[in-house]
Length: 132
Image (cartoon, rainbow, N blue to C red):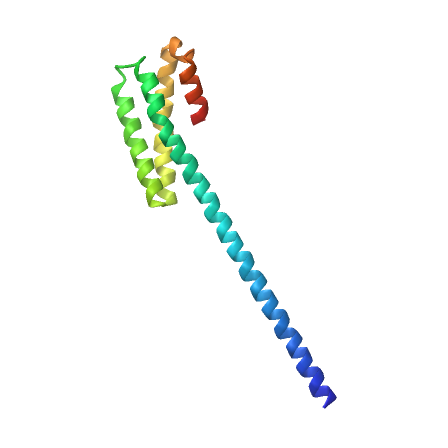
């Protein structure tokens, strides 16, 4: 009888430990999932903010470089794709749209090198810093 009781207590302890391990692991995984979702949300927010700053940058540069219409069209298309990708939540399309936007912005910022007075414009400098 004593040996049977010891076995039952041993089994009870093992089951209790397994239950604690299960719930501890489950809570840890839920916490990690929430962290990932929060980080993804922060990325989307940052990209949306960046996308929202672009019209201001384009308007500033447009005043100095009216003949660079192709670059402005590419930026508008890239921004539109990024906004659509952010709305869809697909990280691959967000990444691709962000790369296209980076490329178009690089060409836009290269325009500023051809216009020294633009580089001295405080609004342009502030917007450029925000995008960076």
